[in-house]
Figure (tube, rainbow, N blue to C red):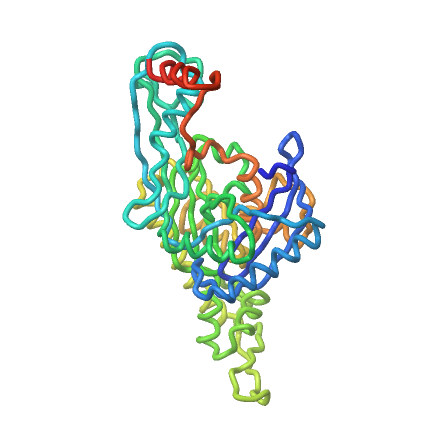
Length: 412
């Protein structure tokens, strides 16, 4: 968190770019003071594909939020939806030197297992302790004060392609902003819309964005798995545009006003006006039954949810994730998505919206803004993320003898 209490979040998505500026009080309650969002340009499937266009979109969103909040931000926490984020779990253990486990022991252990940054052209995004182990006893959340001969941790690491991370950071830096931290999009969305009971008991968050659909599994109070699929709401729009020979903006409008994932008996009788692609403005619109539009939308959403189910089963965490699913992201607002997900996944499904924040306008309190809300929450509480943790140091007297005494206490 910034020293003056001002925090900012930047959600760089395939269809929109959103900036939240907030203030956190002494109880870590966040009040949003500035909001800016802009149609995304230069971003495809969560990746920067046109640096100049993406830079202008980010600048417009940040400027609008700064004007509303009446402040100028110097850094921001940013989400990452592209770069093929993937999960790896590792266990680390080392012997104890006697005495009760304290904060310094925990910090040393996390530093040892959470500092790897680049492996096979991938960059470490998160290093999250899932559970501690003392003398073989698992499932320990807070090991402080415990005695034992060995002390370990099970670490969940999330990495992404280094090029995608570098391009995202470069785009933000060209807007004269420092990247204070990077958070995987599905993780941020979960932090923005979940309640603590869901995180403890097990839940799957499906963040349906414009260019990607990401999933995150939470269990026992921590993130245990992330994955992403390169399909989003923008693909539904493109399917409509191709299937009905209509311009993309009109296809987006048809999807928003008349789109549905579930058919009804009235669809054959309800007619929808579809503007046609024409070289001039004389192209005559055509009338089609709504059932034809539903027949385009439903298969793409069904395919997306089935791919999520396959990825979840392949991870081996389908059972750990429990029977609860939270849908969030802009594409989750399409009518019938929750019902279709309930049928395909055979789980309880609800729609997730930003929670835990004050000051949000009604227009920015929907599922499309869960990730940005979660970024602000992460800025206040990173939930023990050990990435980039510095080497532990104890307070010692100055000078050579003070440092030597500190080294002896650390190692003997």
